[in-house]
Image (tube, rainbow, N blue to C red; front, top):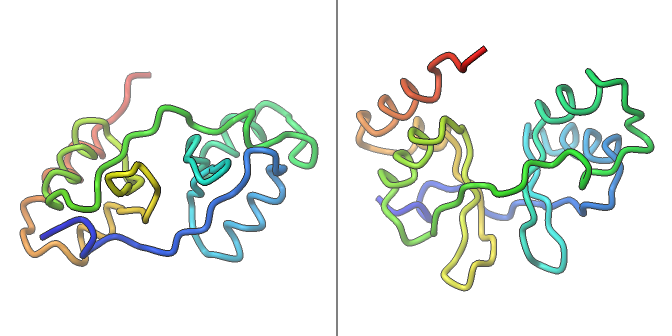
Amino acid sequence: MLVSEIMTSHVECISPDESLRSAAEMMRRLDVGALPVCHDDRIEGILTDRDIVIRAIAQGRDCNETHVSEILTAGIRFCFEDQDSSEAGQIMEEHQIRRLVVLNRDKRMVGIVSLGDLAVREPDEAVCAAALEHISEPGNM
């Protein structure tokens, strides 16, 4: 099955210049835990609810004054829409991540594929099971 068949398309981006408060409000409105960060139709990174908590709130940063660009996760992992969904699962497994930005071959974002998308839409249960097992391994503390 292709990534394009299981991904969530029509994903909204947030600007790196927006405040964390705006980002949190957008997450609430869209009922999501991650937002791609885009500038001029190019992806710069991703911002997760965990990023906001760990990199901003836990450090006492003002969510009205702190910009998305200050705490986003750069250097994100991605896959292409024409790749097999098992490859997306392998990327998630290798890097212990729950979401991948999906790009077309022009490197423009066309969606996001999550572990949940794999669980619900991927017919091969082994793909999701392997990804989940490795993603859920405890990190080094």
